[in-house]
Length: 373
Ligand code: UDP
Image (cartoon, rainbow, N blue to C red; front, side, top):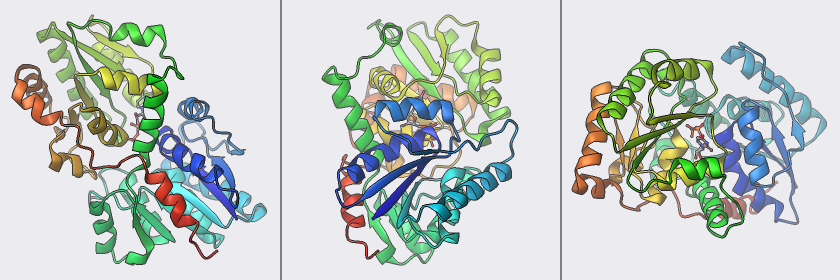
């Protein structure tokens, strides 16, 4: 049977890598990897790290392209490919324009669509924008929804998706995280001197920051920077490490507000293994990323989420993640609490991970093998 895995952005590549490995281990499945190139620079690192060969590389990105422009390119270019190669199943991941456009092109070509990381919802179509709507569109098309948690299954059931079309698997990001951690620990992957030197001082407490969500562009990032500025100036033991996303809406603001501070390290986005290593050495993580919220509980690092709503409530419930939005005062208050209150810190650094056990991709492949193609 012919299965195509579609990726386009960094998180999709990370979270699909273990699925691709598991598919490739199956003799009866012919696996093809298609990349739309939505985040080409960030994606290449990941495919190299996981030793994944991209069979079809589409080049959809043009400068200043609108969301509709990206969507139409994804749909039409994948449609061309699907007409030539008859796949039995395509797998898309999460909530990107690549995933939504890929699912739609698959649907138009009457190809079964499997959705990995299905059922995450905020129930607000503008947060995250446009991801929430992308997710809903994919769920309505998918032949099978691989929901990471019970909560995500419930979201799908409440949208009248039949239970037979859902399987709870855990999140494949934990599979990817364990794969990389094992290799870093065994010396199979070496971490560069530049990264090691960022976290070499045991007297310091490291605050790792990432941010890229569209809904935080403008005012949001300005208030985040203002909080980081005050935190850096008021805490001499604090070192802020911030791999800055390449999007100019993020990069320009962050560099303008923070580049003059000695204990703020603005660095380019990191390859996945370096990022995981820095995460494991951090005292606190401040992020608007989805994947980071899922990974950090396995490492026992408290996460403050710079979003107003989350489609990942599980770790908030279990206590290792807190929602702070982009409110300057709230970010400062929570970071200060974690820095000064040991009890508060201990409660947030439990190594409980509600998102998975590292076996999600195995469960997905076992399910695919049962399909009646
Ligand atoms: N990540 C990375 N390098 C970085 C920042 C993040 O490899 O500099 C990883 C992170 O560990 C997670 C994924 O990228 O697995 C998250 O991607 P992103 O924050 O871009 O997207 P989201 O998860 O919000 O969709």
